[in-house]
Amino acid sequence: MRLALALFAGWLALAAQAAPPPARVQTEIDALLAALQASGCEFERNGRWHAGAEARTHLQSKREYLEGRDAIRTAEDFITLAASESSMSGRPYRVRCAGSAPVDSRGWLQQQLQGIRRNP
Image 1 (cartoon, rainbow, N blue to C red):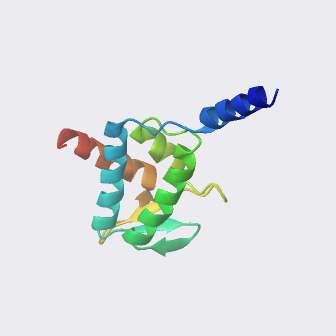
Image 2: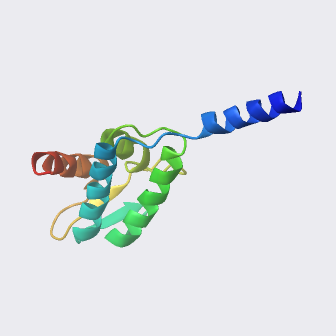
């Protein structure tokens, strides 16, 4: 009986571990985060503007949380689930680059993703 319980507990632990997204998806997400950090643009969340490095750190922690729940299978999943709005307030994230009006992060990141895919 103990052996059966131990085997069942081991199976549950394995089943609970999420598989990481495919390597191509991880590479695209890494490139998106690097583009945001290197852009010189600011990232707004919940009414406060943050430098690219701070935005990257925040989005990376959301990414890790969602990957741990097997919720990210594509770069688009990352954009939609982690990088488009606050999971606390529901307010959209925005990006503001020098000389330009702020835009929703979803559109900005989708545009960056298109560029990444054109020039891998």
